[in-house]
Image 1 (cartoon, one colour):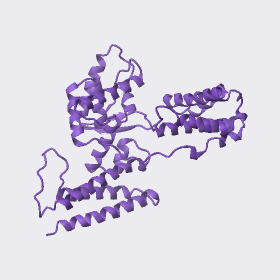
Image 2: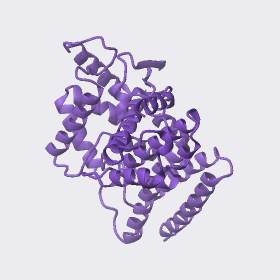
Image 3: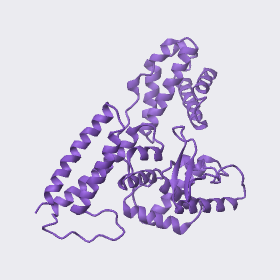
Length: 368
């Protein structure tokens, strides 16, 4: 059955990336190797049954050590299901469409974005600037553009584009969601790109069409960037796990807190669905509630507001709370107007009502 599974995987991945095609082929081989080991008498598609063949394979996946992450497990199941569905229609075996069910695919955990704290962000950027090598500059580029690491790995040397007079942007190539975009950047990011170009020219192997040299391949380069970030975090005394994708979360949260609207943030991040970007609004609301509680615990007319460092972007006092409320209400209303009736609009309506109540209570604190 190996040739059948291989051709089905090829048919499914004609418009996907080479990496996705590789994972489909791996899933097909994994399932067939399992059948050869457990059920060697299965030699045709018509012999496959949900019980025991599929159920035992699912049990095998769940028993792997170390345990598969939920999302990885789900991807295995989804890929096998699509391969079997393809074979069902191309080979005329309708039974195959019922072997893997939708409830076999675990739901994803709804996790909030994990942005770095202001102090962690400052320490990491300071160390990256001090190192000033290929990996550190690539990580700084991730931090200040919100790109995914895969998108950064595929940047061409001419990724900087002029988008206006003295205005520049980075052209992000086709990435995870098969979309491309231009992210506006400042002079600092322009200098990072120029530095990476300079370092690229010093590489023994030049001319492969990428900003970041990859003599050992794309996956090896990604692993090197992750390892460099782990080392930087350890050097500056951060004990929690820090991965490059946290730079993307940090960038998005920073943009939203600076007043960028959700539709614009959606474009900057390359999201296709507003629901993907909505998670950052929840982080913003948590910030508002935190400042609200601080203001209630330390009313301005009872205790003087604490002195904050001049470089801080947050003031945990009543004026800071009211300012954050104003920005969040503005962003929420701007995005709400872009949606038609439906679940996302109803969610925003509930968030707006909740925010209005918080703002009303906060204004009472400002009254003598």
